[in-house]
Image 1 (cartoon, rainbow, N blue to C red):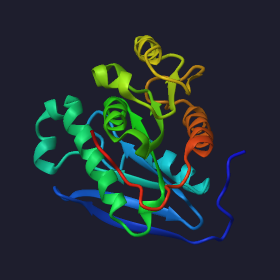
Image 2: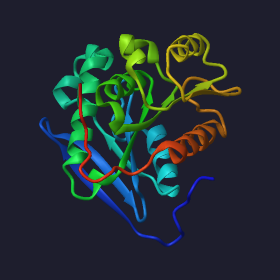
Image 3: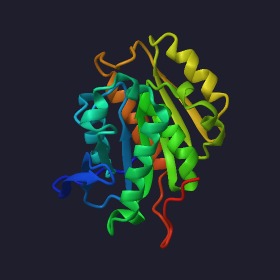
Image 4: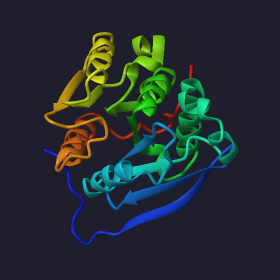
Amino acid sequence: MVARARPGRSSEVRDVSIPPRGLAGILHIPEGSRAVVVFAHGSGSSRFSPRNTAVAAALNHHALATLLLDLLTFDEEANRANVFNIELLADRLLDAVRWLDQDRTMARFAVGLFGSSTGAAAALMAAARLRSRIGAIVSRGGRPDLAGDAIDQVNAPTLFVIGGNDFGVIELNQDAFARLREPRAIEIVPGASHLFSEPGALEQVTDHAARWFARYLTPMAPGAGSKAG
């Protein structure tokens, strides 16, 4: 059963700046939440990505905090190659998790990663380095193949959500899935394309993600924190 935030409960929304590069982000903390999901956008999207914003809002409804952030600076966005620089994107996710661990409120929260497209590869690479600090990963229409050898080092429970009509990407996900450790799962949304723009498709993504995070994200023990390899 997925927990839901109670109607009328308050929430905190912060515009944040992630050091050391001042990456812009939006942190949404529903009252009663004990876990936070950090979003890794793909294909050059920003914290204002409409699809990830919709998923984040739905996760907030399930009492999950969310951090939407820009993985690239304004100058870096001008170089299209940075969109596919998975190591660079993964480093930015590490910066975000370290920042959360230094926040008095967020340090005790469990951390999940939600990656889309190239952002999914960055999420897997970051999880391989952060080890037990990452409690769960969800990939939406991801390119996990771009994570390379990092896939073999991921310990976090990982869910791949793929569109049934996303031909080519389905096969890439299946190949990466075979290399993941348990627990792992694949959910294929029938009739959905890469962007899940079909009616009801994104809602199915959100439902799968909310259930996965609710199952595997548990709060941190006192004194624990991120430990990158």
